[in-house]
Amino acid sequence: MKKYIEPFLHALIWVSGFILIITQVNTIGPFRKVDGTLLYPVIFGTIISIILFYTNALVLIPRYSKHKNAYKLFASLILFLLTITLFETVIDYFCFIVYHSTETESFITQLYTNLILNLFITALSLGYGLTKHWLKNEKKNQTLMKEKLSAELDFLKAQLNPHFLFNILNMAFSSATSHGDERTADMIEKLSSLMRYMLYESNVDKIELSKEVEYIENYINLQKLRLSADLPVNINFSIKGDIHKNKIAPLILIPFVENAFKYGVKFGKKSKISIELKNNPNDFQFIIENPIHNSLNNLEKNSGLGLKNVKKRLSIIYPDKHTLNITKNNRFSVHLKIAL
Image (spheres, rainbow, N blue to C red):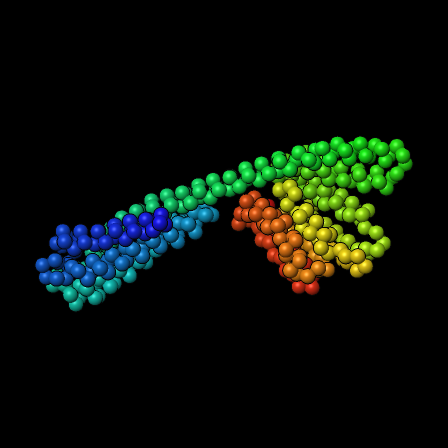
């Protein structure tokens, strides 16, 4: 019901203004109420005012305010004001004045009259549009803040058991080392490194890309230790660019890597997992491909929650600054690009 209140109030204001002018105003330029030449110019002028007001408020202001470009916003408002004023004056002068009015008035005078009225409408639309845009951004920011707080709370809840498991892993590592079980000790050490990163290093908004890459490499190496000869997997992880210059949101890439190992590896079947990281001066690209050994329905059902969560994080952390393309043909392919 609330969404209809604002349109209703707008319609009420425009209709009331139109009725007020028709009933209370006797003369507008060369148009007179007594000779019946006032009605049609007022109808046309009202339509022009509505077009001017809502084009400014709902199209031009949101478009340029979004990019915080005051110069382009001001230029677009002035250009549209002059264009629509010229159009209105041409119609007034060559149609209404020539064919309906008994008075004479120069084109320049009519242009000046229309310009003054349209400047007033432009000022109103500017105030309304900027206020509406600000309120919309405030609402969006509050929503994002609530989602971020909710995600942080969920993360803190999830830390309780990992802390306990992390301590147990340290004990298991000491035990395996003392008994000469190097393979088990190596697996425990890599797993401990992953958990240390998750628990202590990733509790920041942005982290060095090199650390995120190190975390992915540790995860891949741990997976290699887990895989046996019955699971022939070719893993290719290539890095292009200097990974020590940029920062990225922590743990934003690992869900795609986990997904590749979870659903791209199957007993008795050859698999090739390709991971490519491109770090450019102004953007970052992450491309990963893996075979589909499960049906697409099972893949979407099982991995949907993880992909949904990472999409949500991307929309919160990098709004309008990322593109994510996921294709599912013979291979499952992910292409993520983030503007840094």
